Image 1 (cartoon, each protein chain N blue to C red):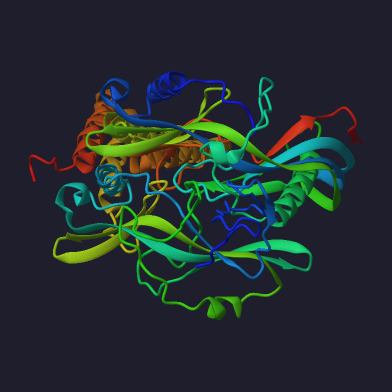
Image 2 (cartoon, each protein chain N blue to C red):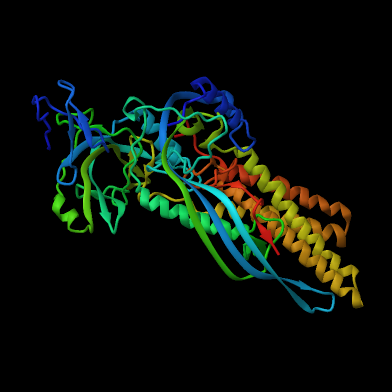
Amino acid sequence: MYRMEKTADDAKAAVKAWMKSGKTAKNLENLAEFTEVSAAYLPFWRLIARGKACVCGYTEHKDSKGNTTRYPHEALINREYIYSEIACDAGDLGVRSIQLPENARAVSADTADLPAFPVTVSKDECRENGYAAIKKQAIKDGGGEMQSGEIGGFKFKYSTSFSKQLALDKVTFSRAFCIPKGFSLIYYPFYIVRYDFQGRSYTAAVDGITGKVVSGRAPGNAGRQSWFAGIGVAAAGMVAGAATASFSFFTGEDIKAAIAIIIFGYVFAGILTAIVWKQFRDGGEVLTGYAKGRGISHGKQISMVETVSADMFDYYG
Amino acid sequence: MTQFTCPRCGAPLEAAAGTHIVICPNCQTLTYIDRREAVFFYKIPLSVSETEAKRIFKRWSAGPSMDKNLEAEAKITRFEAKYFPVFSFVRKTGGKEAYSVFPAKNTTLPGMHSLKIPPGNLDTYTGGSLDAPILEPDVSLESCISQLSGDAVSQSIVYFPIYDVTYTFRGESYSAVIDAASGDIHPGRYPERSSGSFAGALAAAVILGFAGGILGILVHPALFLLSAAGIAAGKLLGTAVLHRKTEAAK
């Protein structure tokens, strides 16, 4: 069990600061009324393990003549990872995992004396989830395969790799191992903050050690949504229109340049429209962490797998 | 209900969730509890008040997926707190521990068939009345056990608090369940909002923007103003699409 380092007032201040994001309803920090701030110790299964992976594949490069050259690569990953997963149903709290900060102080305490939630998720299931997640992460760190994506009809490729060294176009072989070093159940402190706004009740969870808002939901900013609809989409339309009109200025061999401009204009307009659509359609609610429901995200999600030591023992060739 | 007494002095014992050793409050004797055969009774306290739960419902009804006027026009016809029973099993299969949860009562309430035990303190339930009516189990424990494989580690009945909500909207009746421990909502079927009006507002803005872009270049730069009109149209239509009926209007 880890010691609560923040007070209820700190938690309220953190939520107020979080409310000031431009995505949330205007003046939310002044109009919201806190109705409850309660401490809760949530259980987490935590796996510390060494992840080793061997990833082989190649990158492809096209020259100006259209010839494709493949360059083979190999990566050997040897890193330490920590996997954490909540050991009870998170309900509406939107918390899935934790990252222990440096100032976390472990204390011995009886869970019966504290508002600690009981474990209702199997440790074996979590351990296996942890092994799988660490192996996947190790392979990803070794040069994750290029993935195909699409936004607003625009298709593109992106790498799942976090390493700067490699972003393979094709992985031909990969194998990973997970060597466990420790597996434990820990209780981590949170503040559950409930507040009312326009007669509606919203919840946020604040990390009891760092004082950061790790999950929560807030009403969206309708003014921002409608401005997005106006400026964003009209700008997208204008760019697409201007790109189309530019066609009339090109003749003969320049037609290729005209087509390139049109494609660029439409791609840009498509991406902009997709971004605007998300903000306009779902902006009525702002979600942080793993809060359920339809809304736009704000802030970072705590990843289930944390890399402790990176690059020190890795090999890229 | 399983009753425990101290084998030494006969005083009643309470076994907290997950514990195997109980210390007698009277004579301090340690007793080991074999949970494989016994059924333990627990409850999760009702920690979300009715007022709070109604505000949670209101927040949910104002969400982006719900009909625009659901928040203002939904009429709550039933809002009852209850303790719902579930069987919780911990079994060992092939050396691995597995948790399973089954509703202990036949029900049509939304969300009760994909159950998880909500987050909250598990208190020992020693019988008697609680702060809300208790729904008694009508599903036999054996029928659930027969669906499980492996060896029993522990089994219990957990009563967790819910608000059973029924509301009407434009002549139709809907139901939802609010988990009264964490405030999570299980909505079942609900009046959804189509994306058509959102798309319409954007279409008007994009058409004007497109016309401004193309005509501003081909005909006269002044026609770029059409794009500015697109911004205004998008803003106005967007505001109209997002505008909700207020309580006063209702």
